[in-house]
Amino acid sequence: MSSVFALVDCNNFYASCEKLFRPDLANTPVVVLSNNDGCVVARSKEAKALGIKMGIPIFKIDAQIRQHGIQVFSSNYSLYADMSDRVMRTLEDMAPKVEIYSIDEAFLDITGIQPVISLLDFGRQVKNTIDRWIGITVCVGMAPTKTLAKLANHAAKKYPATQGVVDLTNRSRQRKLLAITPVEDIWGVGRRLSARLQAMGIHTALDLADTSAKSIRQHFSVVLERTVRELNGESCMALEQIPATKKQIICSRSFGARVTARVQMRQAVCEHVARAAEKLRKERQQAKLLSVFIRTSAYQKNSPQYSNALSAELNRPSDDTRDLIQLAMRLLDQLWRDGYDYAKAGVVLSDFYDIGTYQAGLFDKPSAYSNSRQLMQVMDRINHSGRAKVFFARQGIEKSWTMRREHLSPAYTTRWNGLIRVS
Image (cartoon, rainbow, N blue to C red; front, top):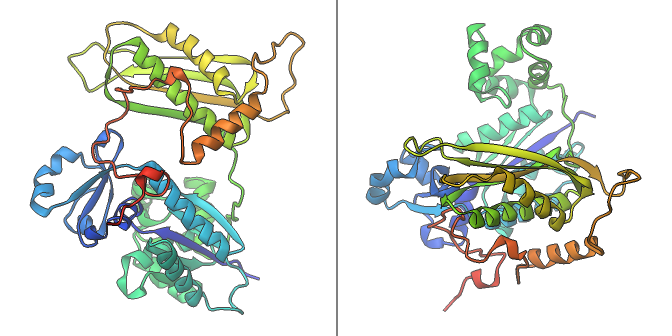
C-alpha cells in the first residue's frame, strides 16, 4: 500500500493567536515582534498585503503603523505554546500517527484512509474541526511523500481556489504543480542551493524532479538526492512520532536593558539555568556538562567589547536545578569583568545521559541534595499549573534585565489573571 502523508500548517500562527482573543481586530493588520521588540517575526494577511516584510526592524515601519493602524504585539510564547498544544492534541484525535514538526506544523500518516473517506473530505474535516474547536485557520496538503505534502500545503496557502486543502496524490497534478513552482520553494532547497541549481539549468521543481538522482548526489549531497526521489513519489522520510532526543539545550536572551552589575548578571544566568533544567527534565535526561557565556553588543561601537565563555563538568549527571545553578555561578565568577555594558548571557547544557544509566566512579561525590527528583517534580508541577510560580531566590524578584516586551498581550489560556472578562 502506498504511503499518504498530510501536512497541516497553521496560517500566520502567532498573529492568528493574538487575533483569536481580540475579535475587534478581525480585519486589522497585526504584526508580532521578536525578542526585545526588535523585528517583525509574524504578520497577519492584512499586514502582508501592506507589504510589511518579515524581519524588518520595527522602527523602520513607524510611519506605516500610524498610517494604517497596524496593531503591534510582543511575542507571547506561553500563549503560542498552549494554542499549539491544543491544535496538536486535536490532530492526534483525528489521525493514528502524528509527527509534530514545529510549533505550527504537523505531519499526519493517513495511509489507508481512502476506503473510509476521500482525502479531500478528510482534509476539509481537519480544517473545519480545528477552526471550530480552536479558532485557528489551517491549510492541509496531502501527497505520497512528505516533500510533496509540503508542496501541496504551499499550494493550499497560495491558491484561494483550493479553499485551503490540496490532494496531490495524482501523478499528473504533481507534475503540473512542480512545473509552476520555483526550485527555491521546495522544502530543503532554499536560495543558496537554488543558485547552484539554476546555474545547472534547474529552475523549477519539475526540472529538479527530472534530473538524475545519481547526478544530484554526485554534485550536491545524499540529502538533495532524497528530495529528488521524494518529488517523484518515492517516500524516503518516514514519520517520526517520537522526537529525537536533543543533544544540547541552549537558553539565552538579549537583555531589555544593558547589565552592568554582577548581581543582575547572576540573576539572569540563574534564570536561564532554571529554564534549561526544566527543559532537560522534560526530555527525561540528565546533563554532565554546562557552559556559560556573556557578551557585550557588537553594535555598540563606542563601548568597550567583551565576549567570553567557560564550560565545566558536574561530578555526575544531574537534572537538579540547584546542582546546575551552583556550577553556573562558579563559571560566571570566572567570566565576569567590571566596566562593560553586557547585552546578552546564556547557558548550554550538553553531554546527556538517560536517567539511571551513568556509571559513577569510585571517588565521584554523590549529589548533596536528598529527595532531588521529588522536589523538582513538585516544582515543575506547580509552575505548569498556571496558578503559582516557584523559583530560586538567586533568580531575583525585580528583574530589570528581562527582555523588553512593551506590547505583550495577556496569557489568556495559562494564567487566571489573563482570563477574558465579560461585563
